[in-house]
Image (cartoon, rainbow, N blue to C red; front, side, top):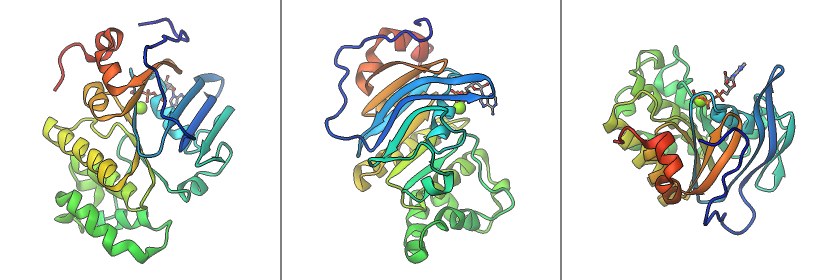
Length: 257
Ligand SMILES: Nc1ncnc2c1ncn2[C@@H]1O[C@H](COP(=O)(O)OP(=O)(O)OP(=O)(O)O)[C@@H](O)[C@H]1O
Ligand SMILES: [Mg+2]
């Protein structure tokens, strides 16, 4: 790979026209004195699936969390639908039709599946609750059978489904997903990626997907970014990145599934 901070120019690196739904400019995030994001630029346009790939510790989750305001960007600017959200409180950002399914399936373990789903919806008015519940139960039939089971007793894959379903309950326009495939069996990974595709194609949901499963993520995404130690080093269409020798060597060798 390149040395950190070096930008690799890519042929055909085009962003869609128009104002992006989400724009990240020059964002720097620190944990104490340690810099985790070193000046990140990224755009997500309405209707796109954009993926962010990179090795462990690159800063992918930090970027997703910084978009949500925790941790906060120390420098730079984040705008959503034309509004500056850089300094907005996390709960205010959630009200702007952005939802996230964080890494590590942070569901509420003592609450039932049903209660977890209610928590996802509670920020908004409850008028659509039954309809939205029905919808996530159709997307994830496993959850439907387990509505009264405590979240903490679900299997890993079921907890991941619950984390995504909970995010969907708020009817987000922009869905941020951090490693939805982590630790899941290939068949479940396939199902989850199909659901993401369906939400994007049928509901027009915009998706920002952080993934270590680079092959699946780049196949699914319209565009992708590669992050190396707090810097974006490459960007392009999913196809361009899949075919790029450097991406292949760093993230795709050793086979895919
Ligand atoms: N709360 C924290 N306090 C201190 N350092 C942190 C904290 N969270 C993350 N870091 C550090 O910031 C860097 C980026 O971490 P981050 O979790 O964003 O990486 P990542 O790309 O999501 O990695 P992974 O693929 O393993 O999930 C790492 O070096 C990590 O150790
Ligand atoms: Mg992470």
